[in-house]
Image 1 (tube, rainbow, N blue to C red):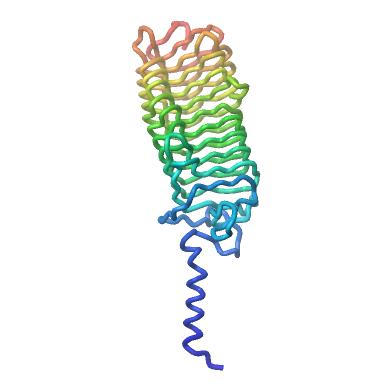
Image 2: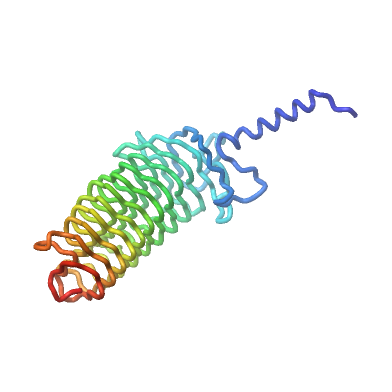
Length: 334
């Protein structure tokens, strides 16, 4: 049988219709599982209403008529996570993306959220196995509550009240993010066993990175390889925290102390940091903090040399070893 022209025109139209969702939403055809290398990132971000997921069943694709209608790929497994990608949202009347009470695997990728000061761009509550990456957030940060195994990577957060907030959220990774003009604290961790590395926290209105152990958390976190600059109160601060490591960070030009251990911090390691040109002490360990080790740091140009110093120890029960400095108090530390 010879097929007519109308047949081929019909086939072409059918293929075009099937490809529309792929172009609009970055959907993958179901021939293979999803991986980070195969997720399509679009330069066009489609508008979407605020996203709310309160259990795994609400991860749905556009047009479903229920749930978030935000999923652009995946099935929620570790090898094929749900993908929420290529969306542009406003968080003026509530949080931009809110996901709660689920352990299915998901990735939030290449989204942009514009938020007001009263709301966050992303809130994860009682969640595990999620990733937030390669996205931009303006006016609202990322908050985790009782969540673990979350990766927050390579995002830009600007002008929010807090940049990234971890409350009772253990075993997470915060890596390679850029946080600027944050009103309170760039990265605030009231939690344990987290990795905070290779972030840039600059030009905020208060503090850079904070580990807070006052609620029984604040243990075994690693703060490594970050750049913390231009925050008016302090660079890196620990409060009642123990067994944390502060390693290889560059902390400079903050208005107050560069690195400070206060309120009964104990058994923390401060090692191989570069701490320069901060308005207060370069590294301060207060009178209530004991059994901390401060070693092999380069600490110069900090304080005024009279009331604030490169190295400042207020309790003799700390070990200061092989640091490079110009001023110190007392003169028995080094």
